[in-house]
Image (cartoon, rainbow, N blue to C red; front, top):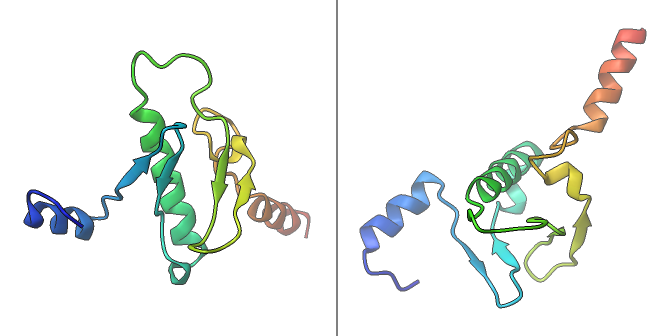
Length: 109
């Protein structure tokens, strides 16, 4: 990676700052983790990234800011994610349905 200040780049990487890039169509590409991170860490990284993305929305941006979300591994198949589950403005944001079902089962027992 080419950067004007290598020390700042290294400290940002070590602190967890995730760089992202955009393309001409407005797609945002970002790494939110590695396969060995485990489900909880990956979900937390996705939650933080999506929250930051919405927080950094430009003032002049009009209309729907998030239209579609996909996740993929490098060289892997892409999967569409239900937008309400990753949109911080939604009540379904990062809700763990499996956890909710387990809690309901525990209460019923």
